[in-house]
Length: 294
Image (cartoon, rainbow, N blue to C red; front, side):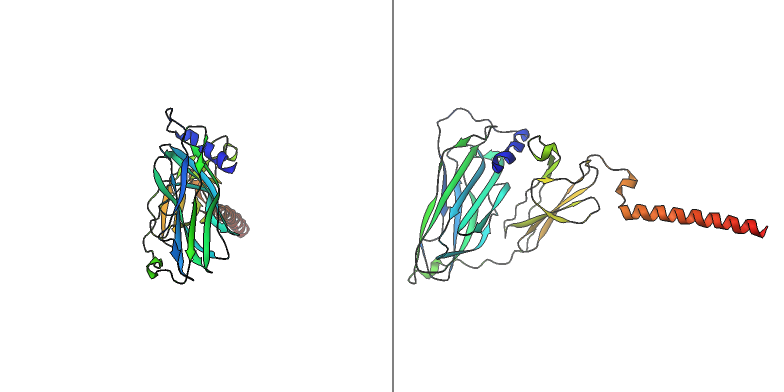
């Protein structure tokens, strides 16, 4: 339901309308470097989707894995075809849930995210996609049939050494430049203005976002973000931070710039008022002193 509500927002941004075609099933699949790996090793599995000649603009699902044999050490979505995550992929109690939106739709085969596992015990470890949903880019969010993914991994002490995944090198590059968008919809946040943003980082992936409205400091935020200042009269800064702390800042100029006194922080206005009062008091006292001298 949450994915459906968020999807309605993008109807106003324009969709690619599909021509009539046979109903086909979008296919989820796992792509991994090996089917056999040793104990206490890092192994990756990338979840992918093949839209099967259909334009898809929303995906969600749930994956299960055996916690006695595999432990999730990281999940990366850099390079994903999903532009806006409603629920970023995260591991909890042997399951990984996710849901996201692709404005304008996606046609073809592409990655969703990569899971980094560490092997714990010997035996057969099976990844199973328990749930999956794909919505068409037809302006209505129509659900299309899906084929769920599964993958068998054999954990063995005799596994070839070349199956071990190399340790990632440090990421020193900032995320790519991006352009946040201000919009609003009656179906989201009570028709309030929201800020939509998404940045790509091909190195370590985006860790989080921070937003600064006007003169106030940065605070963590997720997209879509309901703007605190609905007048749209202040500059907005959006900071995309990757997993190594590198960041890129995008600027959104005010739609209706505030007048000079609205740009001042409240404490500055108070100081000005107090200063004026003090000057007036000094002036009154000075006049009284001059009057007494006469």
